[in-house]
Length: 285
View 1: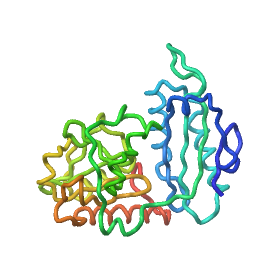
View 2: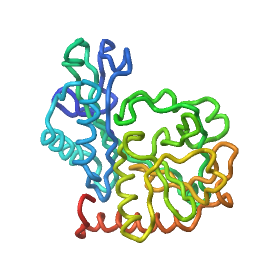
View 3: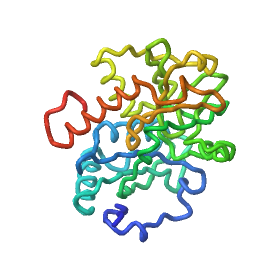
View 4: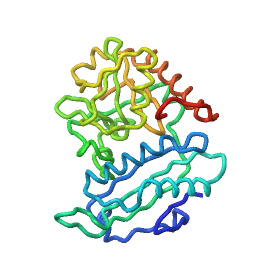
C-alpha cells in the first residue's frame, strides 16, 4: 500500500488531500526530493534532506520540520511499507496559503509520499535512449522545484524521447529529470554546479569515475561538440546510469551504449550491491 505522511499522521495515499488555497496548486510554489531505497534502506538520506533544505531556503520557503524529524518520519514510513519491496520516498514542502513580501512563504505545508519504486525498463540499458534538446534553461537550477512543466514537451513525446535535455544557447546543462554526461576524447564532461542541480547520483558517479582512473571535467558541453562525442549517459536516483545514444537528430558514437558507460554501470552496480548486503562503504555513499 502506498502511503502519505501529512498533518502528523500516516494515511493511504488515496486519502491524502491538499486545500486548493495552497500555493503549490495555485502558483506551482514548492520543493521536493526523491529518495529511493536500496535493500530497504534510503539511499543517501541525509544528502537528499540537506538538498531539500537548500531548495526551500533558495525559494524563501520556511522550514516546517527539522532534519532529525524528517529522518524519523521517513524511517517510520518505511517500516509501514510492504516488506521486501523498494520504496520511492518523496518529501514535499509547499508554499502554503500565504506570501509575505519580507519573509517569503512563512506557513508551508509538509508531506511525504511513500510509493513502490519503479525503474526504467531493463532493455533501455542495452539499447540506450533518445533525449530531445530544448533551447532553454531550467529555472533556478540550484533548487529541486515542483515546476516541471517544460519537461512535458509535446515535440519530445511525439519523437519518442525519454526526456528533454536543456540546451540554452547551444550549451548542454541537464536533463529534465537527470544529470547529463558525455564523453569526448576519453574524458567525461558534465556541466558544473551553479548551472545544474547538485544531483546525489551525479556526485556518486563523479567520485566513482575518479577513483577508477577516469578523467572527469566539469564544464558546460556544447551541442556543437556532439560530433566529437563517443558516448553519453544520464544519471538519477532511480535510473542509476542510463546510456544515451541520440540527442535530437544527432547519433552519439556508433548509436550503441559505449564501453566507458558500461564500465561505469558495472562499478555503480557493484557499489549498490555492496550497500545492499550491508558491507562497509566509503565516505558519503
